[in-house]
Image (cartoon, rainbow over all chains, first blue to last red):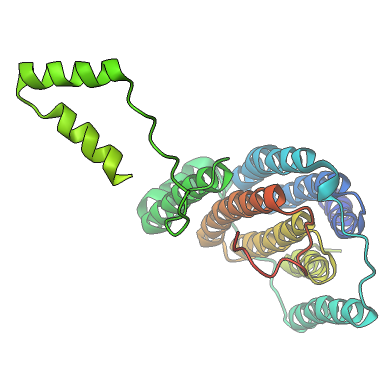
Length: 211
Length: 101
C-alpha cells in the first residue's frame, strides 16, 4: 500500500515537473524543474531496488550536472532566454503527434503484454557492492569506455571553454609578431655565443626572419 | 492495485514523450539540452524497471553508462552554447545553421 502511494506521488511529480521543464518560459525555472524531475525519478529507482543508482542520480545528476547548467544559465543572463518568436502551428501539432505517438505506442505495447510479478531478488540487488562487482568483472569494457568518454568530454570542455580561440593558419596576422630584441640582449647573446660555442645569435636571428 | 513493471514503463514513456515535445518546440539550445536530459532519464527509468523485472544487473550497469554519456553530452553541449554566445548575440537553434567563426 505504501509502495503504491509512493509510486503515484513520485510519478505524478515526475510528469508534472517534466511538463514544467518544457513549458517554463524562464530557463532558470526549467533547470530547477528538471532537478525536481531527477529527484522524483530517483524515488522511483528506490522503489525498483536500485539504491546505488538513486544515490548516484541525486549526487551526480541533480548535484553536479544541474549545478553546471545553472551556472551557464546565470553566466548567459538574458541571452539564455527563449527567443521571442511564435512557433508555427504545424510545428506544435507535429511535436504533439510525435510525443503522443511514442507514449501511445509504448503504453499499448506494454498493456497488451501479460507481465508477471517480476523476478524475486535478494536484498543485495542493486547495492554498490554487487554493482561494483558487475562493473569490474562482466562489464569492464563498458566501464573503461565510459571513463575514456568522460576524459574526452573533459578535454573537449576545456578546449571549448578556453577564452582565446586557437589561431588560424590562413590568417596572416593570427600570430602576433615577435618583440624586437633589445640591444643589450643581442650583446648578451653574442657573449654567450663566444663563451659556449652554441650559436645563440644565429638562432634568435633566424626566428625573427622566419616570422 | 499491484504496481508492476508496466506502470514504470508507462511513466517512462510519458516523460520521454514530454522530452521529445520539448526538443521539437523549444528554440533555446539550453532548453533543448534540458529536454534531451529528460529523454535520457526516461530511458534510464525503463532500463532500471526491466532490470528489476528480470532480476539482472545489466540494466542498472547500462543506466550508469547512460549517466556518464549524459554528463559528457552536457559538458560538450554547454561548451558549444557558451562558445556560440561569446561570438553571436542570439541563441536560437533555428538561426544557428553554422558553427564556423
